[in-house]
Structure formats: structure tokens, C-alpha cells
Image (cartoon, rainbow, N blue to C red):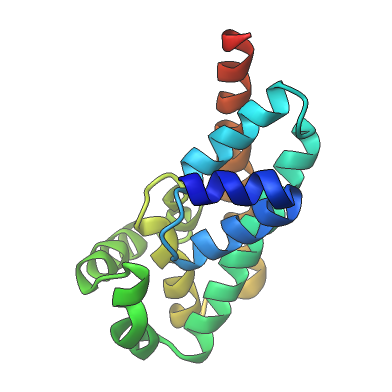
Length: 162
């Protein structure tokens, strides 16, 4: 987390964007902690609340779109070969596929709230050939709620400490 704090302190919104995009792709970045911290920074005036939500949403969606496209173009062999480096294990893939088969695109929206599943739903959407517009709609809705929830949580925690 120290690395994340340093990046945010040094590069601000740019770091927020890239950290969230890379975290969604599967790199081990504590996304929820990051956004809660950003909400706290908004509460003390370092970040603007609306700007933080907007940049977070863009970062999350960029990661989701890139993961979707990788899943669409390369498919499961990508996850089998390189997933271990991104903590995307065969067990997590199997669990995500079960959710995906049971709940369809709602898994993309609600998957944001389940670490490990969040990272796989985008790849699975691409692998499954789900239409881009539908994917973007469900992914965007989930990302918006996820970003607003954690940034707002951090904001109110910050207000309580003042």
C-alpha cells in the first residue's frame, strides 16, 4: 500500500487512473483500499470528489475494456499461460465461469465487489463473445457503483476524522 500512496502523492489523478486500470487487469493492487484512500484525500481537499470518481471510473473501465479485448482475441490460453503472474488461478477461473454461467452479464456488474472474480469476468466476457455494447453497459454500471461506493466511504471516513 505504501507504493500506492507514494504514486498517488507524486502523480495524483494520473496515478489513480493507471493504478486502477492495472488493478482491474489483474495486477496485485488493492483497488478498494486505493479508492477509499482517494475518498479520504477528497475529504481533506487534495482531490476533488467528482474528479476522483470520474478518473476512477475511466481507469476501471479502461482496465475492463482491455481485459475484455484480450479475452476476445487470445482467450483462455492467455489465462492458462500467464494468469499465475496476475493471480488469476485456474480455480478462480472455474469459480468465475460458474458465476458467469449462472448469472450472465450481471456477474460483470456485481463482480466488481468480489476480488478475484472482478478480474476474470472481463476476460470471460471477451472469451464468450458477448456483444461489446452490452458488456460496456453492464461493466460501466458496475464500475460506477463500485467507484462511487468506495470513494464515498473514504470521504465520510475522512470527514469523521476531522
